[in-house]
Each structure stands twice: as C-alpha cells, then as structure tokens.
Picture 1 (cartoon, rainbow, N blue to C red):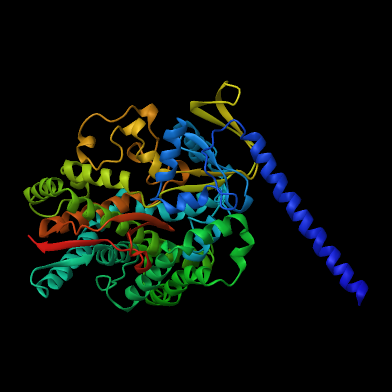
Picture 2 (cartoon, helix red, strand yellow; picture 1 turned 90 degrees about the vertical axis):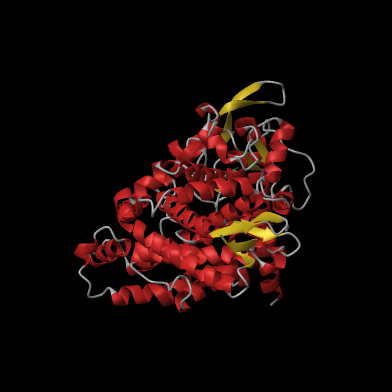
Length: 524
C-alpha cells in the first residue's frame, strides 16, 4: 500500500514537473522570438495585461498602448503565466493572416470550443481549407445577391412587423417611453433570417420558439458581460482542458444550440419532409436538406448549420442596429437628415436601390459598422512557424528597424478589429461618429485594411463573413423602416462595450442586468 501511494505521488510529481517545464518552455520560446516587439508596462504578475483589457471598453486598452508605444504591433503579457500574446493592427500583417495564410492561423483553443457550444460544428467552427470550402460552397448560393433580391420583401415584412409592435407599445404608454432597443430589434432580425433562410415565421420574433431562443441567448450574454466572464476567458485561454468540464457558464452556452436543435430545427425538418425542394433551390434550408438526402452531409451538420445561421444571422445584426439607434439618439442632426432622405424616397427601396439611391443611409450604415463591429477582435493561433511582414516597421531593442517578426508555432495572435477600425492615425477623428466621412475622401488604401469598405468588421479573405451582404440588407431595411416612423432620444445613461461572443452594450453601473441599451422612443 505504501509502495502504491509512493508510486502515485511520484507519478503526480513527475507529471506536474513536466507540465511546468512545457509551460515554461512555451513562454521562453515566445519571449525569445518576440523580444523586439514593444510591450506596455503595468502588467500584473498573475493576470498580465489581460485583466486591464477586460476592464476597459472594448479595444480601448490596445488603442492606448499602441499610441503610447508608437507601434501598430505590440505584445502583451498573458494571464496565469501564459506566453506573451501578439496584438497586430498592422494592415500588412493582418492581411497576411486573414488572406494569404488564413488556414495556418486557426481559431484558438478558447474560441473554437465556444463556437461549437453556441453554434455547433458548422461554418464558423470548421478549420482546414478543404472542409471550409466544402461548407462555404454548400450555403453560399442562399446568400448571393440574387437570393437576397428575391428575399428583400421578407426583410421588409419583418421590419414592418417590428414597427407595428413598437408603435402599439408606445400607444399603450402615451405615445412615448424608454425601451431597451436591443431586445426589440433582435425580434426583427430573428424574424428576417427565419423568413429568408428557412421560410419560417417566428411571429415577429414573439412566438414560443423565438422567446426561448432569445431567452437563452440573453442568459448567456448576461453571464458573459458579468465580472466573472472575462476571468473565465482567461482561465480557458490558459487551460483549454477546462472546456471539457461541466461548468455552468459553458453549459449555458450550449443551451443556445440545444434550444434551436430541439425546437425550431426539428420543426423545420418535419414540416419540409414532404416538400418539393426543387422549387426552392436558393433557399438555405432546401439546400441543406437536399445535401443531407444526397448523403453529402450528416444530420448533425445539417442541424448545426441551422443553429449557426439562425443565431449568427440575427444576433450580430441586432447589436449593430441597437448601436445605430443609440448613435442617432446621440446625434439628432444625423437622425433628422437620415429621416429626410428616407421619407423622400416613396415606397420600399429595392435591393439595388438600397445600394445606390440612399447615399446617407449607406454612409450611416458604414459608420455604425466601423465604430461598433459585432466581432470586436479575432483570436488566432499559428499552427506552424511563420514570418509576419509589417507595413509599419518596429524598432528593435538595439535600435534596428524591423519589417517582419518571426512567429513560433502555437503563438496566440489577436487582431483588434475595433482598434483597427478607429485608429486616429488612419481615420483622423476615428473615434467620432461622423457619417459624412463616407461621402468624401477616404484614407489612402495602403493605410487601411483590405476588408469590406476598408475595415475588418466582417473579417477579410477566404473566411470573410459569408452573410455580410444579408446583414447589410437587414440593417438598412430595418433602420430605414424605424427612422421613418419613430424619433429616438438619448436617455443620458453611459453605455460601455463588453464582449459575450459578440459586442454587447452594457449600461455602466448596471452590468448585472446584462446587455441593455435604453433609448427614449416616440412616434414621429
């Protein structure tokens, strides 16, 4: 028995020492290769710089450090003795990662399991060029311009339903009241993706299925923006094995996917079992069912695609719309000008007219998406050694100018999208909401990102958001509909940005209430 105990203790000690050596070696290797990359001061011994990042509004810490260090490429100290994290806002380096070598930089061990829990093993989760292209080619026709043109009427239907429900609510409160606009627009975006992608009516985002989906998402988001949310991310980033533990925060994330699978997804498949799918060849659900019947995809993949498109096609656009309405409330002159353009166009603009005939709506759309990207940063890990090219060289410790950085396999890289989209060195008054910038001269292309509209809101390269054109369609249609019928005013609360899988607005001092964006709404 004593021998047994001694053997167990010895094995445990050896394992602990081995783990420590591996952790130390990984940290040493990272520090060696990144020794010339500037790092801000003030790191905590235990939490590194990561806790400072989480305590500030999204992207603000990176922006301050890059200004302080005069560099668009920096490193920060990882929490819990994790190797240093490389933070890259340099446009050439970002292009290298997202366009030319995207499959060499997969999602990190904290991001990919979260995607699987929330949305399943679908397009956002898959890695590797072959599998990613297979999934993308399967669903792409359903989100192409021709499919969106034919589905524009469905989007208007969802927007008008929202406006009718909101008007009824206002009439019950004397014609004006304060609402958390996030909850309202989420109903419309859920209805829009239900109609266009699946031929499904969510009852204006108010029926039983819709309320269950929105309810579990709110629970998950509230937990994510709470004080423990960022700490949990740091723990998972350092110890990915925790992803397999039965923790409440992880279970709640899984509840989102489970709710869709057991509810609306099963109903969609049951209802379409006897439908002639050939007459709906551009319908997303029809393509998924046809692929399953042909043996091209398994049942689990089919269900996960449904989950991903319902959530990714509704929640992120809803947050962007909420920020848009908040910006209009803060900037009444912008709201008035947008309303004048919207009412001057009689009827409902077609898909093509939305792109060309409403220039101020287009400018407001771009400005909101620049300032408030739904995905405020990307976290990737290099799968092999690499050399990262820089458009803006850094100065090494010996005073030498360096136009590239060596990268070790396993290096965590953060691309801070919010910081990149708002850099004053590129955009001038980059942190200011000014739609007019899109109606004049833009910054030189060589200073900007190569993504949509010179920003990274929808990512870039082969993994650019596959539904970004639908997101823009939803955004414009719903905002146009609302600004024609309602006036929005500031309530005076201070809103800060947090992250719970996507960007979330939180009222300062009321973080425990979860994502909220109170706006005073009245009938025009």
